[in-house]
Length: 99
Image 1 (cartoon, helix red, strand yellow):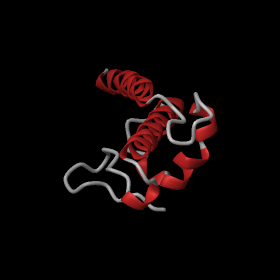
Image 2: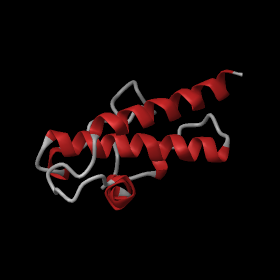
Image 3: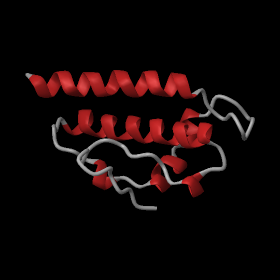
């Protein structure tokens, strides 16, 4: 499943498609996972370029086991924890690019 960024926000992770998961909670979690993956790749490659084009929603789904905190299929992760992790990685990336 390809990712189409929101107009005017070329490197901002867009909202996931509704058919990605049955609940907004899960979709928000997948979005946070994708934010984490993109930021990790940017930090790993030490680039300030947008790498969103290298990722798909399927990649976020495939990484779910890494972020799973529960066996409950409706609440497999803690979205707020994922947001905090994504925010921290993006801040680290932005700081590195500001220098």
